[in-house]
Image: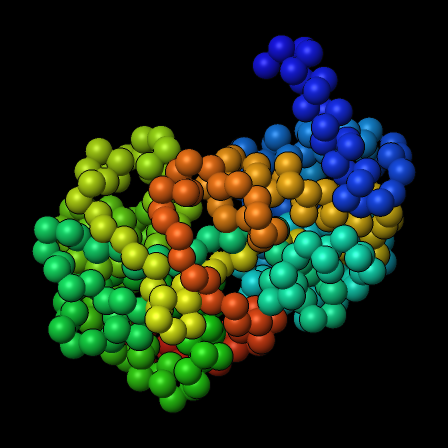
Length: 342
């Protein structure tokens, strides 16, 4: 990018932040605790700094470790913002008392109500759809929704992540919210009965299992597959044409969405800058970059998708209140234990 192009980008972003946040530009610092481990997020941070003059100091780590650290630091915590992945972790941070409610008309207006905390302690900024993938050579009638994964006709065909994974926990928590505890228990037991192997690996490993022939049906977050469409992912991209996909429950509640988001720390020393950064993450430029840089879906309506994400097709997303879903996670873990989902 030339210096003139760079200046234009910064000027456009500065104008967007000023109009979106409705606050004056100001220098200063922002202390960010983040469990998002994506190198592509660097552009989000640098553009914000270039546009505002606010320096971002980062501490990165696993979500639970960062939440525990903030709790231990208490009133002396330097944290201004916590960024993390999955609603269950955002709700865990809220329950731990390390976040605070904020008053932002910008966030209230731009972020859909079901993708923000009912008490304004956290907001979602990007999403990943939980998609059903299948081996096109072996599966002529793939399951059209999550519930169908428990159908005995898929016995010995299903690969999935472990019950300790937050994606698994939140999906079952959503099934509880949408269908009730009894139906969710029956579903989990049915899926266990259909496993091709014991749960293992990450989302990309579930896709690799389809290509290796270890399983015929699996679930993965959309951005892992979109990433393999955009660039080479070992064990997936070379044979990606073998994999079919569909957005589940399109005639019912819609596809389950995993959320990435953040909240302002309970004892934020740079409160004004923290709110400004949160509002920046809802700007069109930042939202577009979540899609372009990390193959995610924006949470703000009308933001263009990157080519890799757009290739997945249009779909209906589940609009269940994710604050309610997060409260079902402990029940979901009890069900996993009960049915023997390892």
